[in-house]
Amino acid sequence: MKKYDYVLVGSGLYAGVFAWYAKKHGKSCLVVERRSQPGGNIYCQEIEGIHVHQYGAHIFHTSNKKVWDFVNGLAEFNRYTNSPVACYKGEMYNLPFNMNTFHKLWGVCTPKEAMEKIREQQADIQGEPNNLEEQAIRLVGRDIYERLIKGYTEKQWGRDCKDLPSFIIRRLPVRYTYDNNYFNDRYQGIPIGGYNVLTEKLFAGCDMELGRDFLEDREYYAEAGETIVYTGPIDAYYGYRFGKLEYRSLRFETEVLDEPNYQGNAVVNYTERKVPYTRIIEHKHFEFGTQEKTVITREYPAEWTPGTEPYYPVNDEKNAGLYRQYYQLAQNEAHVIFGGRLAEYQYYDMDKVIESAMNRAEQEFGEK
Ligand code: FAD
Ligand code: UDP
Image (cartoon, rainbow, N blue to C red; front, side):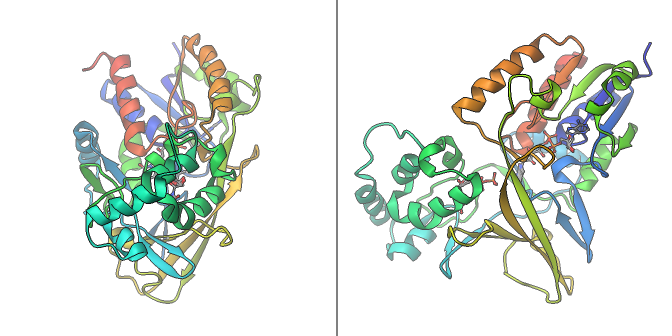
């Protein structure tokens, strides 16, 4: 008999949801986290009474009622609706691409006029779009592509839009209504009190070791638990034996400002290539804060190198092929469960990570 039923590697949402189910079924869990605090990418640091999203702005949205009910059972959510604004050469445009954007850009007032404009501009893209550039022009025309997409995307991914897969841009809605809601999902909000409220509930009753890297002490942890739930990068688990998967990383610069309202919105994107950051987040607006000061974060995209944080998997063909090789190895592990954004190498939103962990846990514990 080992000391724990499960050793969870990482303390993000995947591990948290799995741990919550494990405890519900009377199992014991040890959590190993290499950072000095739990929560993975949803961790919030409190500065000047404001919950600062330390690893990038996180807005919860889902159409999955089961997931929504689950998170609402842990924390109460506010009515925040994400409506970012894009700044291009000092002009402000509403996102996602909708009638407000089209009106600002072309002076058109009706959906018919907007569609006509886009039809004219997409005429040179024939057949199935082969890459992000073609997909973007097909969706919204060349003007929007050049002002609001090209610069932002090339900064974000460090690659030419012609070398990126088209699905990245299909994440964004295109609407012929005057609706600035960034998401199409049925449910949306921010947990009141910040995301740490969720983390505390998910891991309640688990033993936790912070500032410890599982990969540096594998034998010890293999001895400690019957099953490992691994949520770190899958290639690192296998010592990069087939090569390194690529990621995009980010650098955050956070500042406290002695004013109550810096930009009037939680998210402002900077879509010009020559502005080095992609967006400025003003955290208090996620929770309608009325503090005297404000905290802003500039988000700079960065090349990922081992030792820096891997934020976004780069889901192109080369990396997909490499991932498949690691996935084959993972299939043969009897006592290791791989899950989450890094172990599944998927560009997952929070709700998808929760769904994936719920499914795996229900399978593990025979629940339906
Ligand atoms: P993570 O949260 O990354 O947790 C993995 C944990 O494992 C980390 O804490 C890591 O330190 C730890 N770990 C890794 N290796 C080891 C090791 N060897 N030993 C010990 N610990 C280890 N989703 C949304 O739904 N809405 C959003 O608005 C949104 N915004 C985002 C913005 C940014 C900038 C990013 C990067 C992501 C965003 N996401 C958003 C996605 C969201 O962050 C993820 O879906 C979710 O947090 C992933 O949870 P996870 O448990 O898979 O991974
Ligand atoms: N995007 C863009 N301009 C913007 C915002 C987004 O071109 O002002 C593109 C960019 O390619 C980005 C993708 O849309 O990678 C998805 O954006 P999203 O906001 O969903 O990215 P995330 O929140 O995951 O960083």
